[in-house]
Image (spheres, rainbow over the protein chains, first blue to last red):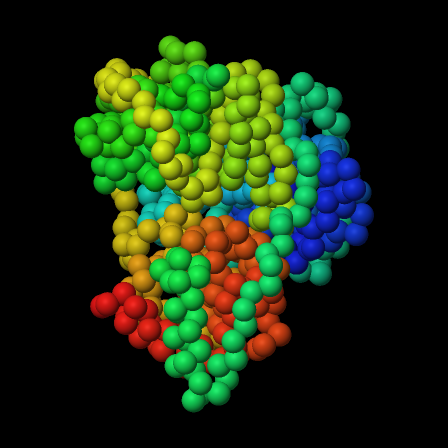
Length: 262
Length: 320
């Protein structure tokens, strides 16, 4: 069974984002890169399948810059068997990334039985790549999954929708599944795992190798800027129990008369 | 002027409010609506009021339930039979799942989760947040038409006095095609409240809530003011609330009219997810909590004392 896990490398959630002077992207020099948090659930799910099916092979695939390969090494340290990296900028659009992932998967020569990914990358927050990849490969897909049961070549998954309701899908492999938090608890890489990961094979391709060119860009971003700062608000001290009722009544009153939201 | 199709999903027979926001904003373009299934005359009238010219009701076998493939196939066939420049939809659970697949059937681009846009000369130019709202960028679409756009609910707002459209409703025979991922069951959510991403008022609890049981005081306040209850990542990771309730960079990005943060310190990844709320109230015992930098009204005090008083005051104000 060939399992592919698509991962992205993104700025750590604590990162303060600074647009470049010309607004073409963000300053990336001092960013700490991590594996996209939602992709960890995809990696973990692949490894859980491998535990009960030792013949399964888990390949992690990533499109992005090569200055740091943290995400792929982390996934291999967790237990993935091998990796493929397509060298590209960090500001590629979803269509180009999906096409590059497709190309990289095909380059491995292994026919995918299951493709897993995070439901979204926390950099461009587009929520597009898994579904585009599925359509490009003519495979079914389910996104935002929080439950997974594999039986033979049939998968039962739970997809989370508005308000926490769940849609229960049945889908046969091969398919593309986009994973959400709550699906499982990602493991930490062990020290031996980290040592082993250094020796695991990592194929490297250019965008041209996987058939992607500038003409594949569909969405262009520009004019990166910080959101407007709010003017400072009003702050009330209600630490003194005797004053609490007065302060709260005043704020509730302001919500009606000044803010007009109640 | 552009020819635009707005896809609307139905919720209990009603179009989603984001559809009306989109139509209002498209004033000056020719806008049709597509819906899968049937909608009543009142809903067609509501769409026409904000500019819908034609309302196409796509009907066919295997389209009674959502499926990414069935809906994408049916809509792709319909769109190919017309000549639309743009296809818009709300960035709802369904819109986010469906549109990438649908756009790829045309090898076309999709600008997702757009919060504002113009259509000068019939060309889309949008703005969208990236990095969970830590920055904004302009977004444009290149390549084959139609171009696809998903719009974040609550971001555009309703357009007052939008010109009405003809609102001609008609049935369209649709073909769901081959569906390989099929919904077998739907497990209803414990809460019947509107989703965080569509809520007009949100009350959020942070780590200072101490446990899941204490969320009861937030639920009581939420019931009084018609709010949906959310949680910070710290509260979710501590097991006080499910991930479906999480607001922030690894949860939901929200933009309600009123956001009341109770015992939320205001980590950068939380602020990113709620900073575009129109009015923010923060209750925190730490006067230096970062949440106060984003709050329109900050109350320094113990949430366990303040929240019940606030609930009582809301009760009085709303005459309940």
